[in-house]
Length: 536
Image (tube, rainbow, N blue to C red):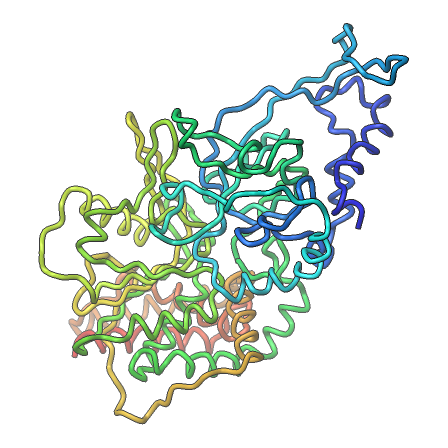
């Protein structure tokens, strides 16, 4: 446990061992990242490292090794010139002084990132991480801890106004150009690796008025790895389901699918068609962007005709229990007109409600919309939501230009009439008679299976075989010929594309990784039901 309790000693030992052989390389980090990567090369070993959050920082000792799983909110903090290594001379009295020969000193640029706790991370994910690292955190509490103030953060740098969160500045000698805003990163580093008091001294100031500047804790990164955004704490960090996960998913998917639809149905007035579409929305994700198209997304609008709709509240409970990252956004006039949905920057990047990690699901509640007028900010906010739904892009607004960033945010919208946001699929809820569908509370075992099922379904590779592609094409052409002969409306290419998109989600939800005839027929049936529902 010494590398966790005393990481600086481990780093010093590696430096002493590798210094002579590394002097010729200005960028060599003396084998430190490789050593820690090998030391914590499995999820089980990673969980031995205490998790850094708003609770643990009050008790974790300074200079301990910590793990911070977070979202990069801003990459444009000022770089610092750092002394990576230098030569000292030991005096007879035991004191040391810097050598006048600076030729062997190694200087490096240190990059800084403003990082925040993952927005919308649901309680079951946080609890899993806390349980996994709890014993080590307790063991470290016996070490020296500075008298620290409560952790601070900058509210404007977190997407959800008023929500509690944790923030830290991550400093690293490695400038990884692949790490960008809204990326989820897993940081292993040293907490407050100096002698100053944590938070009040070892901090990063963002404002000119230093007396009022929030004091942000610092993590000196040893490893900073980009994590795929599935969010499930039991899956591999690279976002690829293991063979055992896929085998189990293929075997159990049909049964779990039925149970999950039954779990969702009471939240949507017992409407089984709506419940199935919600399930497919859960497992949708952007998997490709050929020639500007966005494949894999499924923005869904449920229209509720009931007065005083409780669908948003009921759906929120279900979604929070099975999704790893989820947040409710009330689309009130006040929220649209007075908050920012898009990030904007000048000297620092302020967040917006839509600045979240890929793989996050947002429940947009339009049932709370009241009569009134959208001001300019409200119109821009609504456009930002529409851009997510249509193109999965979010515009970052700067004084002299705007930058569009690709996103993968699932949108589920509940409204009383047609949504203000253009969507891929919309249906009006058809309530079942009272008592037909009874709400049920799954066991903890069932919830765990639901959560794993959703994540594996989202991440699994999928293929449309050449034979099935030809069969679909032939069916499409025959339908158009028949419609032309009968003088009825032709099936459009967009309608065909929607069916193919539905078929992918249906197949994955059934544990199929290659589209079967049965899943295609089911998708065609779903498309017909959606169309007929809207005609009634």
